[in-house]
Amino acid sequence: MSGLSAAMPLAHAAQGAAEQWYDVLGILVVAGLAATYGRGVHELWARRGAGAVLPRWRAAAFALGLLSVLGAQQGPIHDMAEDSLAGHMTQHMLLMLLAGPLLAAGGAALPLVVAVPRPVRGLVARARVTSAARWVRRPLNTALLTAGLYTVVLWAWHLPAPYRWVEDSAATHGAEHLSLVAVSWLLWSTLVGPHPARLSPPVGLLLLFVTGMAAAALGAMLTLAPAPIYPVQLLAGPDPLADQQLAGLVMWVPMDVVMLAAAVVLFLRWLTALDQRVPADRDLRPADDTAAEEVRA
Image (cartoon, rainbow, N blue to C red):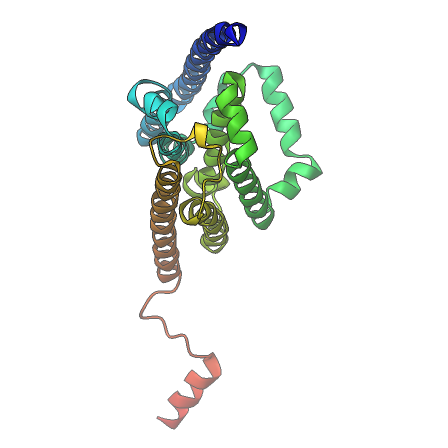
């Protein structure tokens, strides 16, 4: 027993050291991404003028997205995530509902491609014209694949066994955060990214509906479960079930609000586009009916 007690502090110390190294690695990844994106934006603006091709607001959004990733990984948010499941879920929502959309709004594809070496750009160009890439770029296929990937990643990391792995391993925790940011970035790129990569409003509404329902189902499961789904030692406070229920609400409510707001904006944008295509004073009656009325008159 004494040997086990002596080993536990050593295990916690090793885990703490691993977390520090992965924190440093995360900062380096964010810094590298910022440098690459910045170089690409500089190249584009040097050729076409500041704000051309990529508007300034998109560059600002990308910078804010990177800062959001760092903010969710450090400081009080990180401490909350270590203390409770509700804090852990708050961290996830910041990554998926703030950092992901901001990174997507940054329109990073073109700046990143411009910044990489020429041989890499050639590989990207050849990959884009393959039959598989063309199939993926079809709007409905893009929406279905994105919705499926987003749902699988979201649900997989919030099942009891993977959550236990995350708590036990700094590497798994890092992989979890990386995958959550990646699928959120992918999802919102199809909705708020530059026009060529953006889905049409009807397909975008379908994507939001599918992903929103999947996220709501997970939040409802955590909130309405009659008993803790996760091991009680991983939940906080004297009432583990309350921590799990609060975590479910932290996912359920913000996710639904953001998805609904995005759907309303997308629907209004669709109506505006239809109105611009079909002016209000245009006569939509068939030509034959119009001619017949003119003869009767």
